[in-house]
Every structure is written in C-alpha cells, then in structure tokens.
Length: 111
Image 1 (tube, rainbow, N blue to C red):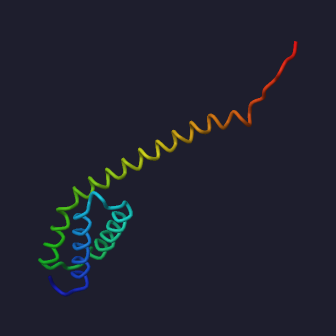
Image 2 (cartoon, one colour):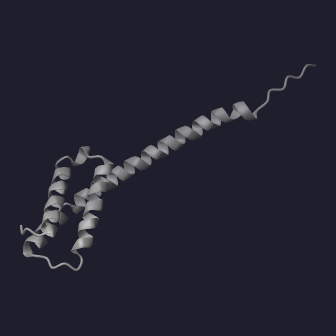
Image 3 (cartoon, rainbow, N blue to C red):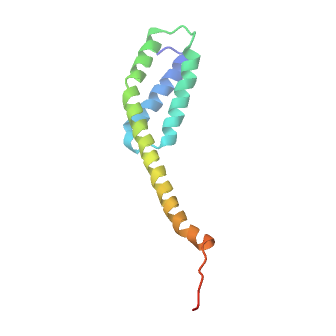
C-alpha cells in the first residue's frame, strides 16, 4: 500500500475491521459504534481525493465485511429492543402493585 496519510488510515481501518470480524459474536455494541464512526471519518476524507489502485483495493476489501457487520449490528439492535421491552414490562408490573399502596384506602364500616 502507498505511504499517503489516506492509505495509512485505510490500512488502520482494515485492521480494526478485521480484528472486530475475528470476534464478531462477542464484540460489544460500542465497538461497532467506534468502527462506524472511524469509517465515516475516512469516507469523508476520501471524497474528492485521488485514489490509487491500492486504495481502491483496500476499500473493496472493506466492503466485503459490510453485510456481516450490518447483520450483527441488527442482531444487537434486536437484542437491545427486547431487553428494553422486558424492562418496561417489569416496570409496569411493579408500578401496578406499588400504585395501590399510596392511592387506595381501606374503610372499615361497623354495623
């Protein structure tokens, strides 16, 4: 790969992507966020830049991971949504029981 700053960034991005792919199933959500942010920054720098053939090859190699990364991010999103749903259900159930204590009265009528 050429020794331009852009080439160095592409190489670093490829390495981080490869590292994340190697442990895809155990990676945390935050790691995906950091990778996506770095990809975004590199893409912004690429716009309007003259790319060497090596840079284009590196970009193509990064694109091969896109579908698997998106799939895993979708799984994490679904998992988070399900967890939030369970938390809300639990909270609503707890509130139903706790709500009676402060809003209800017991009246004892003696005949």
